[in-house]
Every structure is written in C-alpha cells, then in structure tokens.
Image (cartoon, rainbow, N blue to C red; front, side):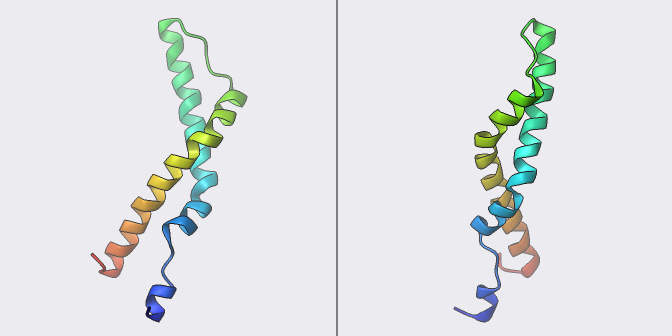
Length: 80
C-alpha cells in the first residue's frame, strides 16, 4: 500500500461525514412529497415525522452519495 492509498478517503469515512446533510435532504424531500400528496387527498407529512423517517432512510442515500463522491474523487485523481 502506497502513501497515496493511505491518504485516500474510504466510502465509509465519506459516508460518516455526509450523513447529516443526506439525512436532512431526505427529510426535506419527504416533507415536500407530503405536501404534494395533499393534492390527491392524502394527509400531509408533519415536519417531525419527516425528520424521524429520514434517520433510517438517510443511510442508503448517504451510502450512494459517498460512492458517487468517491468516484468523482478517483476520476479527479486519474485513478479510473
């Protein structure tokens, strides 16, 4: 393993850093989706419920975002 590989951020480390932003993004999207549901007669999603639902749903969203960002970082470093 080279020194360059040791300085490379893993997908897991990126996911830990991006989880708060990803979970918040999921919460905002759930809340807005709940507002759109009102057009077909369903009840709105309260903000607190959207936040609570975003905690577990933010995990796969964060993992996908971290993989995407790791790919962009590898591309910028010329690894692909």
